[in-house]
Length: 57
Image (cartoon, rainbow, N blue to C red; front, side):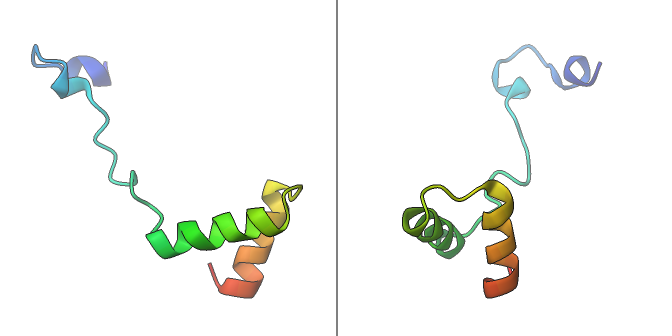
């Protein structure tokens, strides 16, 4: 029903308008990529833990 309310006859009306599409800044993305590059076998839980503890993310 939510999609039916948004639809006005155009494809653009159904496109995602999420306000969180750019949730990470460029600096944060670089930090995440560097952590993954240094530890390629890191799990998502370990990654989030390191980001929280070491970088206050």
